[in-house]
Image 1 (cartoon, rainbow, N blue to C red):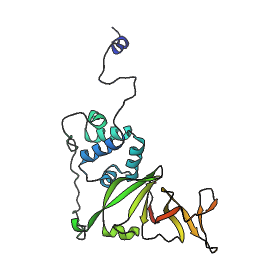
Image 2: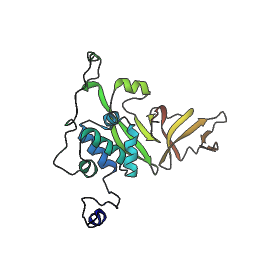
Image 3: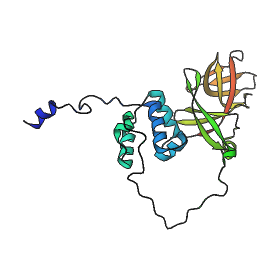
Image 4: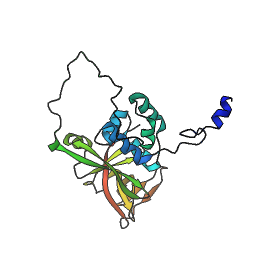
Length: 229
């Protein structure tokens, strides 16, 4: 019997010709967080050398990151059956095939490292069909808030792979990017107060529109951006 005939008559664990229907989106993100034993998506992004907004994209599109899963399997020895489908008993050991790195330099510990007392959770949202949807929380310290120009009452929005930090205390329009809603539909856009007393919205094509103050509500200003590209 030739190999061709033998292959066609065999029942493999996975089909050779059908697309693999692996888990995706939020399920994959949560599985990787458990696998690496990290606290949140920010730490997972650091482990995998990617942007935290990537995980929001996976979730929104229910994406299965096949290339990354293969890379993780090759690096750690974790079976693809677990990575793709969650099959197996418990969470695999990612250190089973690893070797400790040896350095001739002493490891320095920063004396001013943040403690649990000055850490807090920064909420991350996306805008979906005009609604704000919370996707995750990042653990940050007071210095992070100060550098971004926000307070612990504020939040960030993930948009096009970037994090936009919203200061909710800036609700008087002068000039800049603002988070606002028109008839409860949220969006981020360029608003500017002009000498004629009107406030104008500038769209991406350069067109300008007078803002109707009766139907428009400003929720905060974009005070800084973390570029993920």
